[in-house]
Length: 112
Image (cartoon, rainbow, N blue to C red; front, side, top):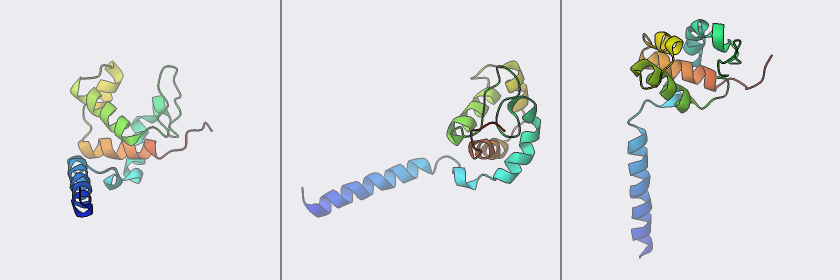
């Protein structure tokens, strides 16, 4: 394979990867400050610092933002079951979900 063909193959693969990633909202477009304001309703169980205050509630601080957003979408759609989380996620917009994920994902994972 010629060097130019190899370069074209790598460039093509990079383009396809970037195109696939652009199908979802980029994490950097989320607003952590807006997420913090929205997280007030989450703080009772998950804490404003992302460290759970109730037994059985997971810590959210430092979790992967993609995971957090998917979990919220799954609770909202019913694909993931939890009575309280399904109620809490029901009225979240996609923007709310991205902002919450960015906020909790950006926190340090240490208790106060």
